[in-house]
Amino acid sequence: MSKILALPGDGIGSEILDEAIKLIAAVESLFGFQCEIEHGLIGGIAVDQVGKPLPDETVKLAKQADAVLLGAVGGPKWDTLERHLRPERGLLGIRAELGLFANLRPAILFPQLAAASTLKEEIVAGLDILIIRELTGGIYFGEPRGQKEVGGNRVGFNTMVYQEEEIARIVQAGFDAARKRGSRLCSVDKANVLDVSGLWREVATEVGQENPDVELSHMYVDNAAMQLVRAPKQFDVMVTGNLFGDILSDCAAMLTGSIGMLPSASLNESGAGMYEPVHGSAPDIAGTGKANPLATFLSAAMMFRYSLGRADIADAIDTAVGAVLDKGLRTGDIFSAGCREVGTVEMSDAVINAMRQAG
Ligand code: IPM
Ligand code: MG
Image (cartoon, rainbow, N blue to C red; front, side, top):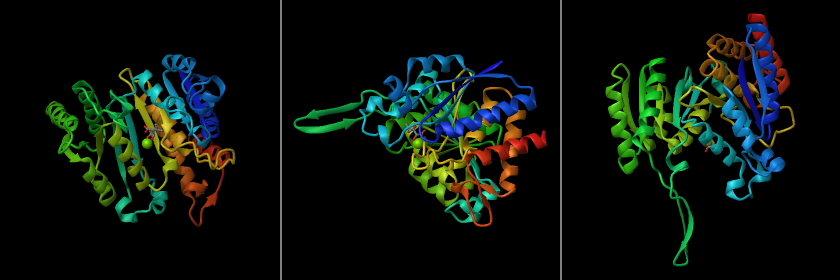
């Protein structure tokens, strides 16, 4: 029996996770899959209820689970808290506690939504790229970090640091993913300026020699940002460090025009993982029943594929989402003329019904 930990978090998080739990219940009856779902606190709601963004109980439950399904964290209510109490700290903390070093962020343009992109349709039609971001190292976690005063002048500093093992394992994850797709891997760095990137490029090249069946290229991060909006289809898989990956994955997300559609997976060395939509907690529409549950459904699909060993269920969810888009159902964020606007629950029910009908 698989163990899943549900962490709704803040804003629209609980609305979309409620629907994901309905989806999983349908999967249980349709596919003879059995799981136990526990609930935990993370983010602002955890600050409100127990005084910190990542309660120990949540860490304990997460370590016992095969997979964690997360909604979203954060909101204006907690923006003025001290840094260590911010909801985002909960997210960074659970990534570190679970050792989730490999963050997979696919940017796939559903053909039904091609008009939603701000880029010309021919630039993005058929887009299917995967960004792999290193998630537990680099400047997000490097020491020393902080703020101090030097001669009456305030100074803020962080450290971008990577050990060769950290680089090698994420680059290897990139090769493994590329091998299952188009067999092309682009490693992104800033080796013309940063020493840490110089090492990144050396190690990536060495790992490349052990993976000769995948074509490896290197690109500077500024050029990569430009190429992503100029000709994004040149990429298959991109692998990069924590900060560059944070930025490039938002850029890639927007190519699809619908951040409400994008899932992500964060994996550790044992294959356990955390799955979450790329979009945030959307405080502006929280509680209105308008949130798009599809990124969470697609994240659940990734969970079945990567941590629960059920690619068949993942395929069924992906197909059902496509079928519902074909029918013209759209939440507000992906709405276009001629389609029918629906809310969170109606969209979710439609996907679950499509899965039932197919199965
Ligand atoms: C992301 C987010 C997080 C990050 C924040 C919320 C801490 O932007 O997952 O991309 O910077 O990693
Ligand atoms: Mg980000």
